[in-house]
Image (tube, rainbow over all chains, first blue to last red; front, side, top):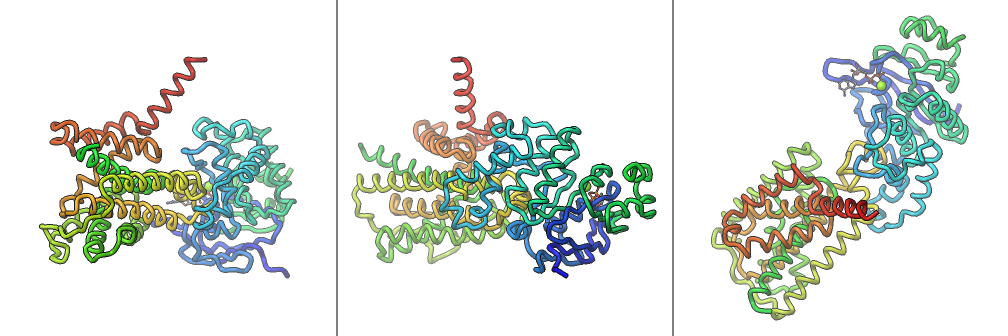
Length: 255
Length: 284
Ligand SMILES: Nc1ncnc2c1ncn2[C@@H]1O[C@H](COP(=O)(O)OP(=O)(O)O)[C@@H](O)[C@H]1O
Ligand SMILES: [Mg+2]
């Protein structure tokens, strides 16, 4: 068996009295596109944040490509190839849309102070950022300020910016929410294509039909616990999942 | 140029250097400092001791900068530990501690200050040229940083630290870099000041000075290079030309900070940008 690209072991996160995650573990093989589902408040966002280190787990370990990254800072994890898109968008509002992506595309330069102070040119990064904006379908907004963008465009900016750091594992926190159905369809296709091109992904998405269409495997959280982990079709049919989830939506997705 | 004009040029130059240094920390990197005068003073005292011991001017300038930058590094470390709003209070505290400390140190001349500082030996014109050269060099360094990927990273840190981290930017390291470079400039300014007055007392590096430097950065337009330079020149000259303004200096600077933040958060630079945009629109 090959070592998993990402391995999460018994991660527990408390917020004051709330247990957001309780001993959640799973592993991810390179090339997978894993769906992470569960009702609101299940702990999905917290799990992605714990993987990239924005939230420090109270217990448990996270390994990336066999290396224990549990105690590494978020920026060190990003430099090792983890990227996150935020469920609640967080563009740099003091920069244009394209500069948000250019900055990320320059990760090799900003990753070291000495390189950062010596390097001035941005041509290659601007080209790459332009390509990524076009890829997610917001090239028209390149020069705009993020404040002027509709939510659907900001969600796609999150994806373009995360892609710009050339991640090995892309953590996508509801990237399709806020997009209209045409935009969502296009972005989902793009993600599938990028996944086929070698980027491993975890996708949080509340539309189960969409998840079933895109992901071969699902991890299901409920109340901070993992209640299922397996092939999409079987997992959605799992009585525990049907019970925890909104039964009707799960039933719809199976047909 | 008479002696008075030369004095003005030197004082303006020193203030521009101080404002450029603080602009790196507060303007580029978003770390508020209400204690910039402490770094100015640290550089000045280090320079005064070195100059009195017979070290040549270039060495003294660098030593002033390095000593201030060491303190800057230490204060920078605290900036990593405290929340944003608390950093203002911390740096203000550093300013008061600095003055309080120096006042009690016999080897630093205590209240009486240090006086045995040798002449720079450059002559009046030579000294002014050195001041202007240093201002030009510091402006060039600032301009380079702003254009570089370091400046790009600073802008991200100033905007949203947590998001900057998810893009691989080592936020603590960037903050420390801003503090070290900005306080180095302040220390060099301190050394220049020492040669200029040849006499320093603790009171020359108090809270008023920190606030005046901050007002130059804010009025000029946080992060804007030319805006900050223009504001530093104007705010230094204003009290020189009006006795009344001089008497109410702290009040004026404080009011300018409040008014700018309330009505023109992007300062002079922002006002000029929006005016020129309006002009261009009315032309077409
Ligand atoms: N920063 C936080 N502080 C306190 N509670 C939080 C925080 N983030 C999440 N929670 C709580 O943790 C639980 C899981 O939240 P979250 O991970 O956002 O769920 P999901 O993304 O599955 O909707 C919820 O009860 C939520 O209220
Ligand atoms: Mg969520």
